[in-house]
Length: 127
Image (tube, rainbow, N blue to C red):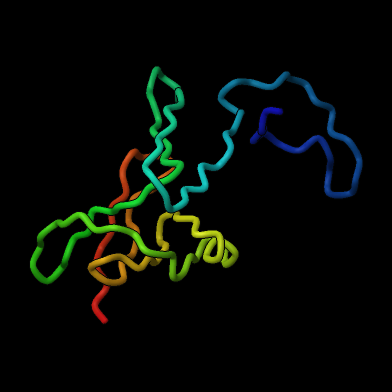
């Protein structure tokens, strides 16, 4: 079934709108990537204008920038500590932008969008 991001067929009162057009491709949505911890897997999907999106399905490492030294290192992900997108994502170890993860270098806040971009980047949080 296709996810549709157009206006609902129903009014707030429960009545039906007169639907004057058919669904368009640009109104269709996609299922979320729900990036988890595991061996790296990427799904490539087509976007509008012959573009490609690289959705991270599973990932085991993150590129971490240390603000004190301005250096970037690769670290392995241990677990998800907090996720402001959804509190239930923590126990399922789902990573989204803004999630706080525990890595081999310490706690990191994710700054990239793993469902839209092919790699995972974050910033080290001082304790």
